[in-house]
Image 1 (cartoon, rainbow, N blue to C red):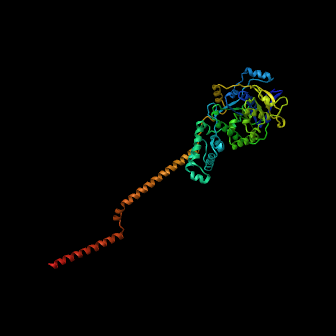
Image 2 (cartoon, rainbow, N blue to C red):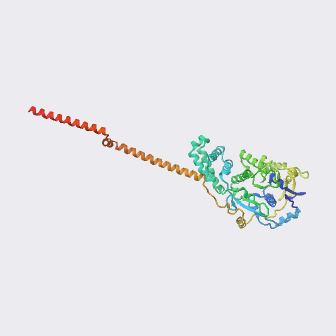
Image 3 (tube, rainbow, N blue to C red):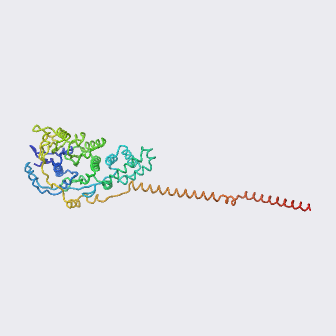
Length: 496
């Protein structure tokens, strides 16, 4: 039943396989709550890992963590294997690295503000066009002035600096209003309260650590703890899009390899597109379309195929459709859309079967020879080999302690960046202003003293010429005075 270079998915009228050579052509797993999407995700993750392909998957409910523990052949698993004739079924365990943006249920994952970029950060902060424009200016100023933007305090410090230099900045880069900066600062505060300060910083995630294999050649399954992260859906969706973008930027072009270099599972994929502006949807479409040539397969997991924009949906070639419910007009439309995406099977009506599927059943269509989609088959999905269900907390901690990345990301590094540079500039500016104030005060004091002492200085400080003239005047005055006195006295004598 197991075949080299293929992943066994289950049995319809025949065994259904996903060829590894088409694993990077992306895929879609959909279905209503409780129909078996998580088990299908685990089956795919185990299959890729066993074939030596690393996997990254978000674990929304914690159930996927059981892939790190040897299966115990639960009754339903053994029964399912017998029902579909899966004679090669056996218990197994797979290499796992646990990750967590908050650093509690896995190794911390961090990215820098600069790596996130203005577009994704604006999406995360829910900024309008004007505020996004100011954020773009902030990134441009930081780039031009050599300021490293690593964490939230760096960005806050830069925004304060822009506000203080708004006239200068507006002249060179465009208008920077106090209102826009205030709105961005408030949005950063909300993001920080959601725990984002743990995500932004260093040491930043090295993509190579997601692309490991163990000593037996099995692909390591990187599991992101997302149960707490789901309370901040914008942070969750933006982080996963950032990771896809990083993969696209860093990995070399390899065309169509015999098997993917990495497979990426995006659970609750609708969160990426809810209220997303067109520029962001275009970004997702571009990354999904081009990352295939880097050897990366992207699999979206969501309840309904209408959650995915048509431009992205068209890129998803491997499809597993679990049951959908059709109680409302919108749900009925979703069933028709889902049915129309499959290559028809004359044995049944795809639209009717979608609403009749039981738990663990799915409609499966994958790429076959020459990249042609297979005829859709009503398939009973095979049971996973590892444990189905979450690990105990102590089991998770034991795996983390022996992880190949243990100690690499656990300590936050806070190196010299925009915050420190701008703080030093502010201190230097403050000291310069204080010195200037002191000099101004000393000058004013000196001027007041000069004005107060001017009469005394005028009388006591005479030039030699002034002294000679004053002496001459005094002499003349004295002689005139003596002559007058003698004349008066002489007249008095004659009068006697």
